[in-house]
Image (cartoon, rainbow, N blue to C red; front, side):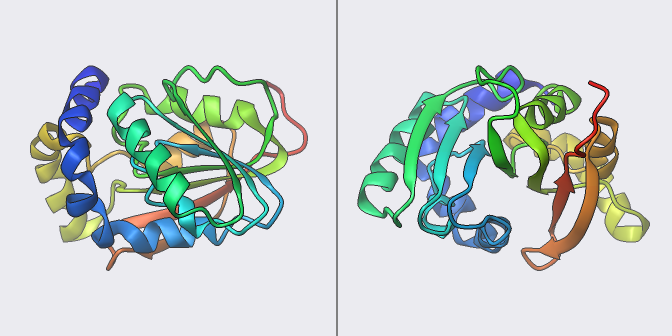
Length: 206
């Protein structure tokens, strides 16, 4: 996936992003937020226009980041008009080079972003780095699959890259190679996407 192309694409579609990717993918955002407990420190990677912010439990401290300035501007407006009792901060930042300290979040949530970056392995390592030992990384994404559905995703991936994401990335393998232990995997959005909950082990070698 060409990250520069992806950034330019999402900058262009920011004004209509909510219409295209809003309700159709909201189940995944809701399910990801349900893996967050009140009072936790949350990093949302690829916050986009802030569509998932209202789903977090009240009392959380949420930092949302996105590489696209136009997305962040819309997210700031949404955080103002639909706050849910959480403290929300928003910053423009490259998810593959997080300007954040080690082990500073209880949960890292990454909805629909891992297949849009140029280096998914580096993104997963960064998410693990900023997550506290024993914390969780929650990912919602397209992923490589088997059978006829998997073959179709593989065939469609070059086309989907033109609209900002790929469909054949082996997400579980990338998470595990980053040193995260997958504890839950389930389908969302009528089976189109999967939600993964991975834990950062207490004892690490990195």
